Image (cartoon, rainbow, N blue to C red; front, side, top):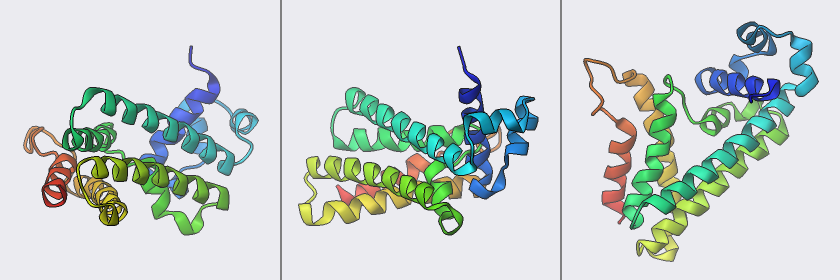
Length: 190
């Protein structure tokens, strides 16, 4: 059973991933869920507390998804391509961008605690990617920078996908910018 708090988080996440942190308000959530703004404030007193809850949930969801990639894939390249698929799946949900990528774009206007939580997400991702790159044989002196490049490429690929528009009957499902960018970068790295 979905709670009101879960419904609020779901709607806020969808709005944030399309519009950014500053592109939605409690009024938007209220209108879309047909609940009052005081109901939202009951669960999340401030937009910062809502964003922190969103980030905690997103971080946990990504950790679970990464574990699934680890469980399903064999070999570093397949794991990293599976990981890129997580970003492609986010975009497939109505042209959404990575929640933390969107928040990072708004970093200068984010409350400090939200900015920290956004950074913590990227730290988690960088550690995982660097570990997989190390398993692939990339020298230790290059794994952190290569992991940053890979993450930047995935976030940038989401922006390119949005600029090109979502796949439709004319572009076809084979126009997967995220996986294409990931594969190209992996060819150069490992």
